[in-house]
Every structure is written in C-alpha cells, then in structure tokens.
Image 1 (cartoon, rainbow, N blue to C red):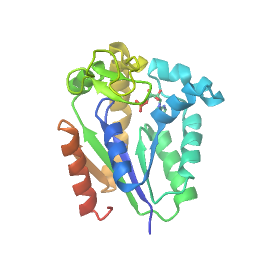
Image 2 (cartoon, rainbow, N blue to C red):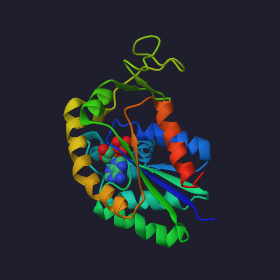
Image 3 (spheres, protein in one colour):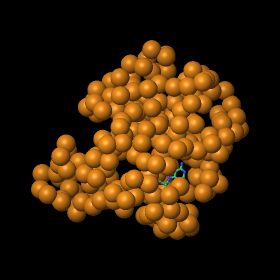
Image 4 (cartoon, helix red, strand yellow):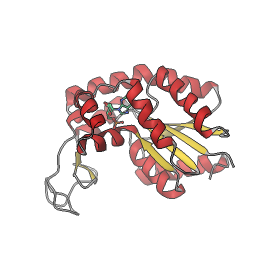
Length: 220
Ligand code: AMP
C-alpha cells in the first residue's frame, strides 16, 4: 500500500492547521506541522529551539537546512500516511521534500497538495482575533470566545496572543506566503495533484469537503 501524503497550503489564518489536525484524527496519519514542532522545541529550550527562536519571533522563515532535518526526523516515524502543515514553503524546501520522499517513503504515489483558500482580509481579521492558551486550545474573540474574557475555559490559564500574530508581523507573513506559495501551488497544479477548498466556510463544512475530495480520490 502506498503511503498517503497530503500537503496543506493556505495563508496564515486560513485554518489549515485546524483542518490538518482534524484530518490526522480521522485517518490516524501523522501530522508534521513545522511551526508547532519549532514552537515545541522553543518551549523545551532545546538547542534547536534556541537556534530558531529569533526567526519565529520576527515571523521570518527558519533556514532551510534546519527545517529539512526536523522534517526528516519526523518522516522516519512509522505511519500509513503523513499530513504536512507549513512545509514546504519555498522552492528549496520543495526539492528537499521530494528528495526525502525518494529516500524514506519510496513507494508513495498518493501525494496530493490541498489548498485552503481565504482572502488576505479574512486572514488578517482572524489572526488579529486569535488567542491561545498554553494548554494548546485556540480561541477567536468573535467566533469562538472564551466564557470569561482572557481565561481558558478548560484549564483556567491566561490567554495570550502569538508574538507573530501582531499586525505588523502578519503583513510580512502574508507577503512571504504569497511570494513563495505561488510557485509551489503551480508545481502541484501542473502535476494534476492540487485540491482547492474554500476556507471561508464553517470548520466542520471544510472538513467534510476535504473528506469528500479524499474519498473521491480513493485516499480514505
Ligand atoms: P506557522 O505556525 O506555520 O505559521 O509557522 C510559524 C513560524 O515557524 C514561521 O513564521 C517560521 O518562523 C517558522 N516555520 C514554520 N514552518 C517553516 C518552514 N517550512 N520553513 C521555515 N520556517 C518555518
């Protein structure tokens, strides 16, 4: 059985992380989210965490070599499929990923890119209203607010804004995304392996559409 590979694309704030998580839960495939992995390294104060912290704070991309070695380590886990969230982000990383597939996965013919499309205005609005808790829960001040302002419903922790969700940093992240994703989306489109989903719908509806598309491709 070829391993299933789904590579999520979408600007910051598109909800692709949430959709990747839902898909991972449904299928049991392993999710490789480079942003989450980097944040975990920073929280654990590892050597890698210390090397990458300044890039995440500034909303800049971590050097490709560091990123590729993190992906390689995770791609060596046992799993019937992998879901990528936040990687690859440029031409170099696409090449690194294709090389890693050849080296580690070998037999996969079931590789698809999945674009969660939202406008920049919507992305900006969502990120500005996003609040996190250290326990991992994510809130939106309008669409998914906590019961008591500023406090996590589940653990009572104080909610905070991601450093890189500040308006100035968001503008830069969106610019980087558009500059670099165009080429990547084009690559998968030409391969006939690009699935596009309207990301400006309810979370559940988007998930259902993703499952339908994957079913029609006999991936699930
Ligand atoms: P994300 O959670 O995907 O928005 O990523 C947050 C931050 O982690 C980015 O702004 C980068 O600093 C870093 N990062 C995540 N994925 C990558 C990647 N593929 N290449 C380089 N840096 C990354």
